Amino acid sequence: MVKYLRVNERIRASEVRLVGNKGEQLGVMPLAQALETARKHDLDLVEVAATAVPAVCRILNYGKYKYEQAKKERELRKRQKVSLLREVRLRPKIDNHDFEAKIRKVKKLLDGGDKVKVTVMFRGREITHLEFGWKLLQRSTELLKEVASVERQPMMEGRRMNVLLAPSSAQKAKMKEEREEGVKEA
Image (cartoon, rainbow, N blue to C red; front, top):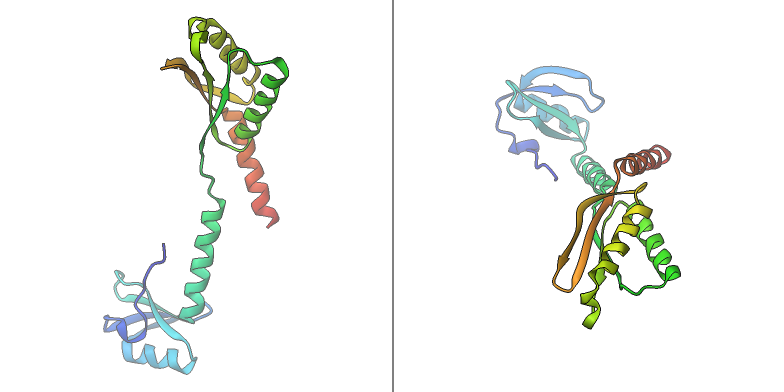
């Protein structure tokens, strides 16, 4: 969110409180004198607090200032983690090893901070044996209880049975800690 500031002749205040380019207070003066002071230093006069009485203006290189603000904003956006809803599909007759591989995949997604929807898909006459789906989802939530919390209990939606898992609070704290360590290193 780049904030547009009034610069040089666009400043409307008749009297301004001037701050130098190193942060030192230069006092309250008429706008014309402040503009002249900025020109002497080959810099811009930028209004940073228009609502203050008198308005606060700062002497700085406006192009460089805008660039640094945009850079800070990009850095903040880069650090934000967007949580996605991912889906892992199972079948009622899944083999043990395949099931374990799917559980590892779910753990990896949860470690990444995403919510995971574990779905058991029934085809044809498999729908008559819903207990296989219930057992499968119960087993998966049991195996994932250290890294995930159940956000929505197992339920049927047409020919699919779903459970929604979210990273547990301990997992979220661990991810936050890792993110902060990454920021300190940078």
